[in-house]
Image (cartoon, rainbow, N blue to C red; front, side, top):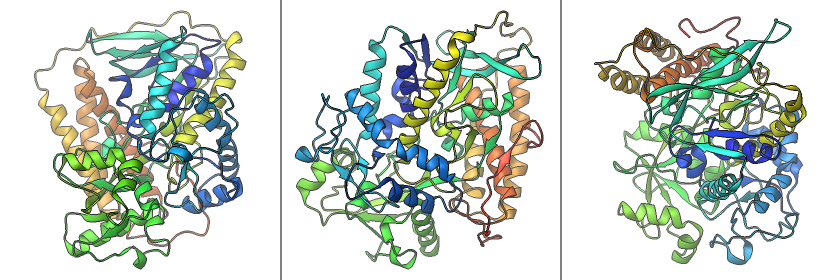
Length: 538
């Protein structure tokens, strides 16, 4: 489930020994991968080291990263880049920096020609990229491979409703055997049986009013896994990207962190710079620090945005290194070679998610979760830039190996009851969905945003509980639609975010609470277990 980097990688790594169906809610390219600008963090420079990358990640994660997982993920970065080169991803090279040159290398182990850039939190240049459209380049290469593989079936316009579980032969535990899926083209719910189910559904940033994410980022995998009985961790850590283009018609256009890596400065409306007041690393501080600094200055001055200025770099440099940003900003009348870019923070990445191990295994047999929907322990309290795509590939590799080791001994489920829609009716009051969707996202933005306090969190919890009850009543009485399914999942995920935030009585990384500004000496993950304690209406 999911057609981004994680889902397509898993499909390609398993298709040689299994038949694979890849489900996408909309068009295949509507996931977050397609819109990712920055790149993939990997140690390829002789002056750099995996140990340095590990320490940078641990620092950004503010004590909550799992060191073993961090070392495992980052230690596999070179293998990941080699595999992507083999797939035909057109990474930018040193000889043509700024020109995304296609290179299907005959020797994927020779990666010295790849151009490296730097992003916030990284002490070295270690970001492999395809100009400023890395996600698009990765997606298109993997999609082409998947479309050409006879064992991969790509299915669009299908929204998963819930997972199907059955008791194991031992009877004590349950096993995932498939999913009910809403076919948007026929307005019907179908059953897909499968020996293994992989959730690669992305994050839940659409819970917030302002976000860099595409519309489908509604936390579907997290919500389905919770309802099935999986543990969820660290949902309070929602990363707000510091620099989203501020323009009424831009609709969540991200301004990549790589601009700051190449010398862009953040400025107030009067032109003064301010990041030195907040961190010695200034614009290259981790994202949580930069986002809070911008939020502080906007509230202090009462201004709508701050500005990112890279106009001191040459026109040729900007047009070749950042062609996507240059052309997109120009559409809105902003020439980045001469003018400052108006920016604001926006919800960007869900650092928590479904608890998994390094192979992507969840608490339920034969159910896996990979990518942003999962919690591996890599990101801690704050994801460092460009580590997320790397995580997608490394965990997908591990999950594929695990599935291969089990597939011969795993039969298809026998009898599964079809979806029962006999007791529901068509709705004549669709306005409830759009109204509750808007109320949910405004509530989360106002009360569970970059800076929080206990009163705001409790106020949000009461509002979300009422929305949860209304949505559940509506869902139980009416035929489903894509909007209803997304709202049902988002309301649940919002409740999980708030419950996690209320449990953390400190400020750490992406979670800053004015009532608990200190950071505890011992860092602990926030674990929610639906089989023991759960939000009131989840």
